[in-house]
Length: 344
Image (cartoon, rainbow, N blue to C red):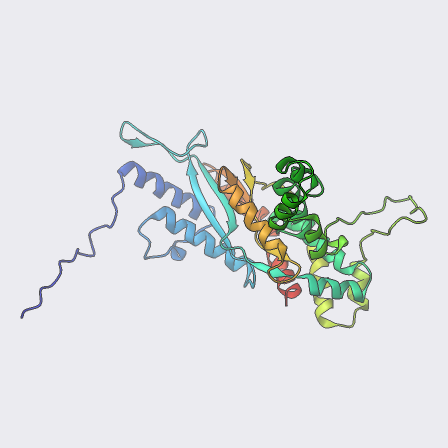
């Protein structure tokens, strides 16, 4: 029997149809990005019919080349175009509104769990307070660039997620159980994250920020010493090469002058974390993080790590924005190296 050939569209037929006004606006965006030196014509993917998506892919690839190879993090850079009122362009009288701003933002493509407790405790054993100091550097610097979900955040989230804002579950149990019904209290306690579970999951120093002592002020006798460890001295005195590399990266990260100038405009629950730093594999941290995500997806949430709204009529503003992002690229590479070494 003869085989019937299926009809095929010619390769010259476009897969999608865009209005002339949209095509003109998108072409203008491409010219602006090329003029600013952000996108090169030869870097645009040939197999992408949508010029806007092609520009996004070119920007994403360019930034990943600047950051370098990563082991743990998977940053994703995306762009939107906005009108003169910084809203999504709308069609009026059959014509698409002009593109006036570029909305550039980045987030994590797929966050993963990385157990870091064993290595942090080994650092503390090698030099008092060293593991706590490295963890604090990660917390302090990543919040401006690539936030990570750490034990102190798990502690804070537990308070409002399970305990009605209190330091343990007792007030929540009082609200949900009848007075003097210990059986109900224990049954509900067995189903929830409790203070005892958190205390067992992490050492106290992992859930508390170190306090830098004020200059000229002496520590009172009997006060616990919470001062950070001297990373420069640690890098010179440690004999273990893996620990020396961790300390060197933590020191380099701590010296980057980062700020919150690219902080996203947050509506709803914030879930823009690039990694979950558990203490041991599959410990209580992952459960708390999953419960936070479930709550966030029931209403508004923000998963952006950083963003910038840039006027398209000024190619110099685009170039200046990307120049300021260079410190962020350096920080992402150091954060990734630290997480990879601590979880190894």
